[in-house]
Length: 557
Image 1: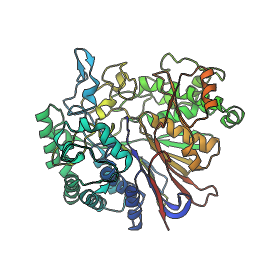
Image 2: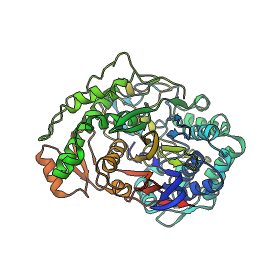
Image 3: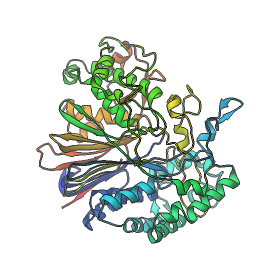
Image 4: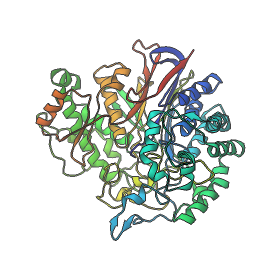
């Protein structure tokens, strides 16, 4: 993922939003998404309903990032203590082949990024439906119709959305449906503040509300997409839509300094590698390192990131197709890796490690971010995406649905980086019906069995490291959650061997990191995160949207 996903946060139960105590709270990247979640809570919905309502609304007002033409992971900690993980990741079509992006023996990256071959079968809608049916209080149609009204009457475009349309206008213009929706009649891009209407998407939402998700997966939408694909050289068929199923997964549950960390399992690499990085860092007194010399703190964190991403490149994939070792989150294995970290220099990582039980003990093969908490104690975290900005850039005429380009998250060829610069191996090779590896990392943190923090992020592989950095700032360094979310972030993904740092990081720290041997690349932002956690006095919750972007955190009493 590049403009990977959207992350929404909705919480309820002694909540604080933007540091104002409330009976419920929602934080998203768009005010209309936040308002949809709040309205749902006011109308008696629970955290699951609020999060799904926000997601469906963001699919209208922030469709460049996510929508029902993409996928999602849903992580829920229910009031009774049960943990639920719903996998709504896209799947490769049945006609997909391992070498489908090779031309003259070499990968053609544009094929997996733009156009009919770039999309996997979308799973977000199926996952939202399942979450609401099994764990919500409202009907899916109740949550779709308000979003449909926004799509029909239109909404003023925000600066980032307008910038994305301008940047991608040439590619969007290649496809009739996308051109009709996202560009003006003269072909020029919409600008900030102009109203974007999406009548086709409104009709699609209303049809799903009236007839259920079978209209999407086994009815007119599936047939329209399948027909368009057949005419334009794509592989997805109506049968692929009909065959789509969500999966129940077993959450990744580990501990860090006495806290319980709950993450999403493969095909997400997020839960595994958030846990693995934290495991490596646990032997270090990070607060003492930061107080003595901040550069050493960032250095150690970067070295742990690097080792985790080396393992990601080799071991991670869809557990229904690949054996993903549970040993990756083994504490002894983490101790072996962390012992390689030197405080006085960056050390090279030549290849992946060998976790214990790599051939025997694997993450289970089961059939089964927005974050929310309600007055009953349900906590929900959903991360959703169409992958790149506006996904594959394809809207099938008449549907209004932006199709994902999630196929780029597969390894088109071993050792060849994807658009995010990530390497992959056999475990993430393309296969029919397979789910591509993801970095989406919906996360819940518990203390003494009770949730105290839920978070997630957008930004491709940087999702994992954003979640880690927020946890470290908040739990290790003791920063209040708003400060933890706004503090400078770093990112290292092993290959390329460079340490990405935000420009807000003190130049003297950057210089010290370079002296330690890091190849530093500066960037304005490594991504966008949202979080909700307990207030400092423990009597409420704080909902925070990332200060790097426009957004809104709101609550009600």
